[in-house]
Amino acid sequence: MLLQKLIKSILPKNLSDKIEAESRSWMVQCPNCKYERSYWDMGGLRWGAAGNPKINKLCSNCHTLSWHIVYKKVG
Image 1 (cartoon, rainbow, N blue to C red):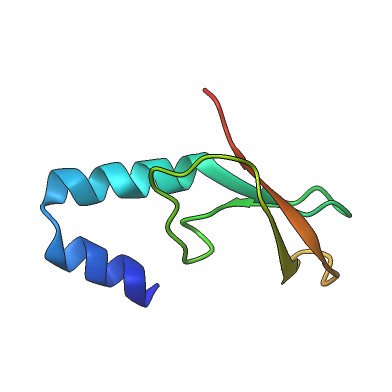
Image 2: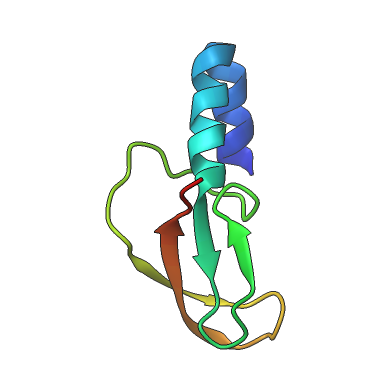
């Protein structure tokens, strides 16, 4: 969240709003319980990114450590 605040304070509003909107369109989903959150809501930034990486993290819903799927939500 510190990086998000820094981006918001340094960059022009229109650009920081674009970065936030794109980061919110990237979702992180737990493979166990299917709970999902946006990359932005997790405190991250994903802008100008491509591909569907996996990140190893603890699910805030089912509390299981697993490789979460990262994907861009369309629509």
